[in-house]
View (tube, rainbow, N blue to C red):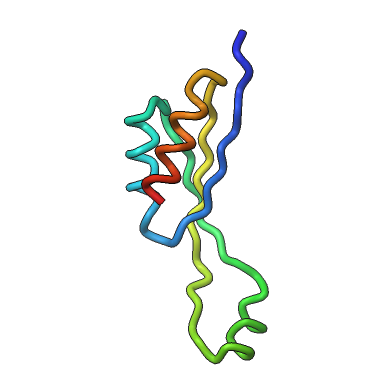
Length: 79
């Protein structure tokens, strides 16, 4: 039995669909997308005086060891 790998990618809100589509073309069977919000935002805003979007999308993909590299590279290319 192949070893299972877990790939986790954190992208800007609204970009997960593009990343998941690339991953599927590379052999991923599917993905789970969660919504998250970063912490430490207040300190960054006060220090830099700029607006940083704290909302992110977290993509979780499980892959067998044989497809892992192709999926990983596709995510990097899309991201």
